[in-house]
Length: 230
Image (cartoon, rainbow, N blue to C red; front, top):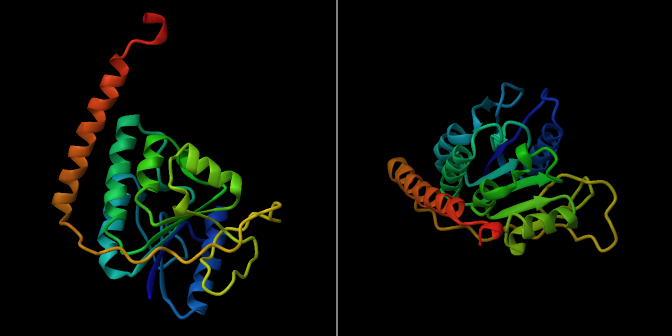
């Protein structure tokens, strides 16, 4: 299998960079062909934008070259909390459309502390909903994504704390000793999705259409009178 690992990479001072090295080693040990793409210049084979609209373009262009995408979400990845809300929504719609072009997608978010803006709100729901599986470091994070980001529980897996996961398990970020009742190593990823990628022009048309609907929804919500006005 050809796997693209998209993640911060050494010498970046980012916990996700260290985990990316471990993930690459594990994939290679299982016989997979692995390439690394980092958001900033690093020891990885290549670097390119991995956040916002430019990140969506990067991921969409890579989809046909690989069988699977493994995201270790850290700094400069996916989200740009510093931009206005409407722009964040547009970015997330583009990212979700790009992620759906892949046959198989996984994102390891750890405890969410390294995810820009914590990946919450509408932007987070859009992006996480486009993934096959989201890996988290513990049950508390799993509950947060399920309840607040509305990620389906079947798509969330708690990673094993061991440095060497069981055969067939997906590597993920360790979070120290497991709490009582912590989950076993995560199950295999869901089956391959049907791969029928649309042209990029059509993809962006879908993004603009969805953005227009969301904008109308936000405007309608802002016009609604509050409890004091009723």
